[in-house]
Image (cartoon, rainbow, N blue to C red; front, side, top):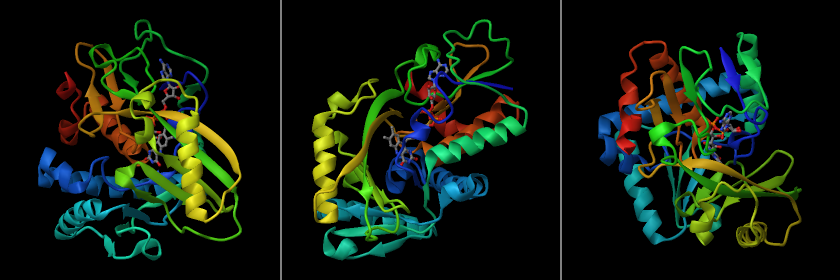
Length: 324
Ligand SMILES: Cc1cc2nc3c(=O)[nH]c(=O)nc-3n(C[C@H](O)[C@H](O)[C@H](O)COP(=O)(O)OP(=O)(O)OC[C@H]3O[C@@H](n4cnc5c(N)ncnc54)[C@H](O)[C@@H]3O)c2cc1C
């Protein structure tokens, strides 16, 4: 087995993301239940819980089971969260309702105890070590421009938001979307014990062990500008992140790091996993809509089963042909 990476391991989104390891899909549970049916949604959520457990066993100290807090920024979002919370409870998922999170700064929140914080680059490098030990030939700085001549029985294109040029009729349907982040100076005080995210995921942040606040989002401040393959930061989003983090800390903070990366957005917020239409031996796994840390592992395992000819009925909800 061979892995071709145009850059180096963990230099795509997997090495530069927010480090949230979340149960579930990219859309809320109730919305997903409407899209794919309640039984399928429940099964999907349970699979992501199992994937989190597998990440815990693979990632070592790059994984900490902190739980996560999904915040409501206003009364409308609070009502939406409540609907999702009720359904999660009815379907026997472990979730807690919090009435006045952050000392009342947010309207309400759901605490997800199974969620985790990841050091994503370290996790991915560990995965690469496991793969190399299992005999995978890893070739970095090796961009593939055509599937012809690869001499492989099967090829999996797993480039999520990074346009590969290899997806035939699916090219461009997993939409490259820029996410921007900052990391502050280390703080002495402990402000946040777990990942926080609100405004439908448009703001997200957590505090690392070294005290730095890592904050991302605010894509909605320039929504159209962020549908791009350009991985540079922009003054507008960076200014929004900077003022948001000053507000969180109660004072302006020095920003030590700024960066951007690409993730693959899909309009129905479901991953795109399966055979690439109109090809003999090409497969795709991507389109995690900003939730690839857990979904990436899960979908990788599902597609591997299919590529090996084993039954993979769970792939039906991620069928790539739905995008055509
Ligand atoms: C700023 C930001 C914050 C995020 N925060 C979170 C988060 O907190 N939690 C979460 O779950 N998800 C988050 N995500 C999404 C998550 O990072 C991705 O969904 C996930 O990392 C995708 O993993 P992947 O291995 O499929 O793709 P990637 O890690 O993006 O890797 C794709 C690789 O494909 C390579 N490539 C592209 N074309 C070719 C080619 N032709 N030949 C060879 N190689 C090629 C690229 O070089 C790239 O390294 C975030 C994303 C961003 C950008």
